Length: 109
Length: 115
Image (cartoon, rainbow over all chains, first blue to last red; front, top):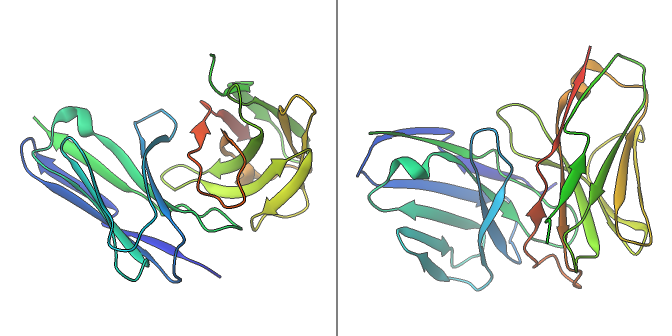
């Protein structure tokens, strides 16, 4: 069945450094969504990518969807302590809705 | 708008018991999905309800069942609880579409502990 893999599992950065998490699917995706979950909280929707090669920006966050629609990335420029949390990608194909395992970001002030 | 609400927030059960968790979707949403999130893991899709019927199902045994009511609220039932069922159970609502393109709004979850 379809698998969605995310790397790295954990990332510790110094405040101000950049951060990137990668999401890879075993099958072509119709779309991909990104969520952020703060410690003790619930997932909160960040963005959805639909088109091949799509790039979207939200302030310091840049999201990319691969040309083959099998991978995606989230890049944070100049991390801040408010960026702490776990970032999940989620496949959006009709059928089972599959989340990646998440990348937990720790930011040292 | 209260957003997605879930009850109860915490629950402690013993092995073999049965549990019912409840979810009210965000106003205007008609589709409810349930997820199980074990500690340190991503949410695992259990099933999705639309028009009072189960539309999609993940890899969960028949011990996990659900229901959606005419007002779009939903229940998740788990029978014959196992220790491994201990997790955060998340409900997410969205507006229906023919494909799963829509943003999901998550509730705060129910923390279930099975002893």
